[in-house]
Structure formats: C-alpha cells, structure tokens
Length: 273
Ligand SMILES: Nc1ncnc2c1ncn2[C@@H]1O[C@H](COP(=O)(O)OP(=O)(O)OP(=O)(O)O)[C@@H](O)[C@H]1O
Image (cartoon, rainbow, N blue to C red; front, side):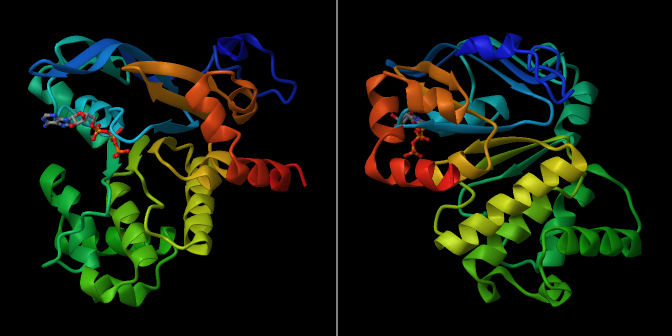
C-alpha cells in the first residue's frame, strides 16, 4: 500500500513521494492516565490532497485531531506542520502556523449569539488587525465562496439549515485563507444530497485553491467520491493507508468489513459506472 508513494503518475502530477508533506506525525503516543489511546502513531498529509481519516468509534480520531491542533498533550513523538516542530516553535512561529490552518469542528460549532458574518470574522479579529469594512468585504467573499446566499450574512446559526451551518462553519475555517483545513465529520447530520454537495465543495476548494484537507469521517460516500487517500486508525495506530482501491483490497478485518460491506459495494459499483 505504501508502494503508492513511488509510482510515477502518467499525467505529469508530482508523485506522492515528491509532493510536500504539510503535516507530519511521528511516533506519537497519547494517553489519559492508564488509557493509552494512540501509540507510536505516524502519518503524513501531503499538499493538495484530501485525506479521509476513518476508524471505529472510540478509536481515537478526535484525540489525534486535538493533539495535532495542540489541544491535547501527547506523551511522546513529534508533530510538524509546514516543517515546524510544534514543540520547539516559538510563540511567534506557532502563531504563524495557526494562521495557516483552518478547523471545522464537529457540529459546526458556530457561536450562536453571533451572525454568520460575525462568526467568520472571529479568526480575523483574533489574528489580524483590519478595518471593519475590509473584514465585512472579506467575510462576504467567503460566504460567496462556500455557496451561501449573501443574505445568510446577517442570519444567526439558529436561522440556518444543517447544510447551511456546515457551509458557514467552512467559511469561518477559510477566513484566513489557510493552506490546510481539518474537518471533523463535516457531513454528519446532513441528508445524502446535502452531504454530496458539501463533498463537491471541498473538492472544488482543493482544485481551485490547492487546499490540503484532513477529513475525519464515517461517511463512505465522502471516502469514495472526495478523498484521494484514506488512513484507517485502529489498534492505537494507522492500520492501513492508501487509495480506495487499496482499502477494497485490504484483508485487515476491520477495513474489510467497513469497505466491503453491502453499502460500500453499492458505492464502488456506482463509482465504476
Ligand atoms: N479528555 C479525555 N480524557 C480521558 N479520556 C479521553 C479524553 N478524550 C478522549 N478520551 C478517550 O479516548 C478514546 C478515543 O476517543 P475519541 O473521541 O478520539 O474517539 P473517536 O475515534 O473520535 O470516536 P467517534 O468516531 O465516536 O467520534 C476514548 O476511549 C475516549 O474515552
């Protein structure tokens, strides 16, 4: 499966081995008291790819995401973002890294007392010193970018549908024009049409802006239609990583039952036309 890294692609795209590693996780161990959740886990995310991150419930997907974002402490190992070792980074370096990443937490996590426009401006206020009018213009551009109607700007989260909340949360994650976005189950709670539209939007962002996407998901549709590569978390580490074809060929029991279940077979057939 890791052989994929050395294959020369016929379409002139850089091979995976050549493309830049944006996020590097090396031998990371995270534990809560006696409960070791991740043990010597290693994973790379390369520029411009959409990585789907899956694993059984409780396997530690959120713990890894929170560790990468510096919200949960690791016991050992190294995490590098854009080549910066986060343990050794100065405050100024850490700030520069933070400005290059965007996060969409599960359930959207918008501030309910703020309008969509104000929500999108939260990271701008935190990291930039811009005049209000410019922030308004920038936030409206983000609203347009994620396919929301402009009148959504003045609405509060409670006035939006689930799909609109996800888009607004994505607009906020994109507020600082990040190079990588971390999406935690972005299509959960959406109907299949809304979920497919969201996946299309993410692919469009990658194609037009060169965005790198790290997507925690349980959504097989997303894995089949949007993700370039899949990493499977299990037994406290990355069990398998590779393309959907690699997942379909894997004999690892959890991967086999997940990717070769009835629903997955239907999606595979549909993808093959
Ligand atoms: N702050 C914490 N303190 C103690 N244990 C924790 C903490 N956060 C997570 N855990 C434990 O870490 C393990 C992994 O949890 P995590 O939420 O990362 O799973 P997950 O793979 O994201 O699951 P799901 O798919 O259901 O969201 C669980 O056993 C959980 O109880």
